[in-house]
Length: 325
Ligand code: ARG
Ligand code: MN
Ligand code: MN
Ligand code: MN
Image (cartoon, rainbow, N blue to C red; front, side):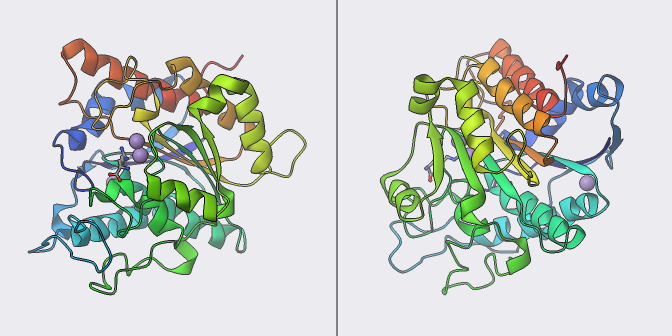
């Protein structure tokens, strides 16, 4: 019951300000206190929200890449920051702590997953991690397929090696080594409903396991989780493997999480989101979780912002073991 917390106030993977304010808003609303007091975690946190500005390059112009539709934005900044995040997550995970990373936009998952993957390989001689990516989006664009240039739409491509450091600027994600990477066959998506055409081709060509909202409607979230966990060898009676849960709050319907940068209608109910987290907790395989894309500056009004933060706290508490009888 040792928990490492990395609070990442970073928004450079996308253009809307505010997402860097999420960690403090989540912590202020009592998230870490409840993990300590109700779930009895020993919480290791340096009481800082890192903005990682000390790692920002002096200049980071849009990176023009051959065959890309648009330039890649803040490429060196995101690369440097995610490298620093990976070191912090690794530090916790290498001591056997469960690691909670509070974002920030979803580009930060390049760092958190890299840190988890490296630590688990070292602690369990070469073992790979599984990733459960809960999101309205697949975030698997390469710099070539992206229509936005925003790196929060690309983290899965870089952490899986589907996208390589660009020839035009090899130091962009040049820090990602083999031991940081994930195996694309050990990735599962849940909650999808806004996938770009180029991403659909990537999913198909790589045989990536994905449960869209259509599947949630068709089978129900219970069956979807049975299938997802069985696929990852984490079902009942199976051997299990370490799971990194990367939860984008926009997987939830905007009714429950309106304050986010790229909301998409027709999403998960809060209960379905909580159920996903509870199911993963129950496997006993969870080694790390990200909660990302909460943006306390967006949303219609104060109630909308409060509800989004409450939803985010609920997801984390469920993943970490709340409310199971
Ligand atoms: N697919 C779009 C893009 O590449 C949207 C990505 C949204 N990602 C997110 N983490 N909210 O820009
Ligand atoms: Mn820290
Ligand atoms: Mn998303
Ligand atoms: Mn995302």
